[in-house]
Image (cartoon, rainbow, N blue to C red; front, side, top):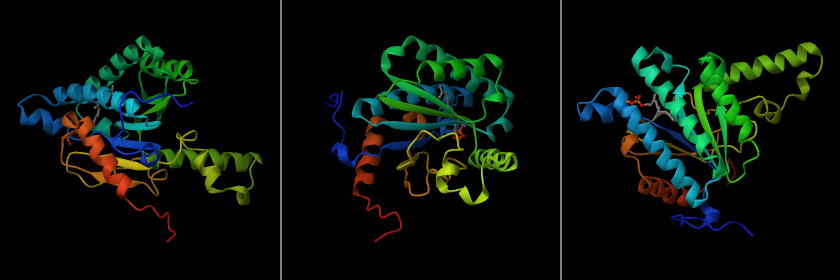
Length: 244
Ligand code: FPP
């Protein structure tokens, strides 16, 4: 029998998305409004990330993905980049302390660009949580969809060169399996708070049929109530996947 949910979702379980992707936008503006440095916005954004993970788990969402650092975010000032790295380090320590959560952590992105301690920290958490089944939490770090696709094309080209793959054998499945998200279902619902209406190079292949949800709340203020509103809106959408 399925485990009872810690909290009741706002819609019946059969109307819940299997995979939600969050773009955590608006940290800088949240801080500016309060006369604080941008880094304070990321601190509050990271706190909120943990609250939203908790809530999604409590209502029974099986896969959640958060855009924590893009391939383009290296262009930000050093202080801001360092703060985000520090928050990720702290988070890894917390995950270690709560290994009983039965949550699998997967990193989507090119980890080779990170300092060895962070890269090793991500690698070991991925390894140590790989059999956890209640929820999969994906952290997109140094992630960009185009970069991901380029690396998938290179992998497949190499296999063709080696003679282990024929060009005519390449299917949508072959491509999906060459992406960071190979073990995940496609995104059902993509949420971007903060009043911006774009998806910023995030999960472009995986969101081909995702429902998009935008709202004005800045990420640090995005609450469980906002998740509920997105889920209610999602449950009302008529998903046709190109059919009638
Ligand atoms: C976008 O808001 C946010 C980011 C580029 C970074 C998000 C990172 C975190 C919330 C911390 C990650 C840490 C963990 C543990 C997951 P913005 O700064 O571009 O906001 P703005 O558009 O208002 O300037």
